[in-house]
Length: 147
Image 1 (cartoon, rainbow, N blue to C red):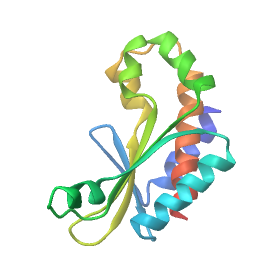
Image 2: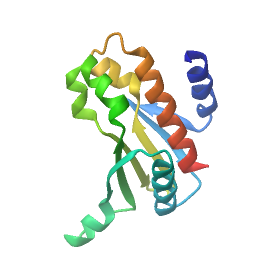
Image 3: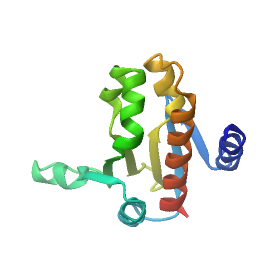
Image 4: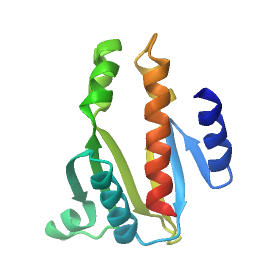
């Protein structure tokens, strides 16, 4: 399993970067289409979709401008619950979130929390298999939304 995870990380290394515990992947699609791709995939995988937040619409409601920016909040209690049993404080970072946004140059990015960062942040011990599952799933969701 860890070998597969390492392979996935190598595959993403050409177009993904990690910064402050955030993995970013360039999307060839608009924010709207990348979000639609992700939501469709989450529903197909029977993930719980909690909310899709369109920050640009929120900014417009208060008379401000913002480049396209959407947060998709989703999760799976079958995986999140065991992780919270390992380290209750990780609940502050759950459910999972994906940020899909357009930068100043017009490039669209798909970003999410690196599970290894969460491991470090919450001092998670003895949950490497769960974290590997989460890493694998999040990488697949990112790939599905951006390819």
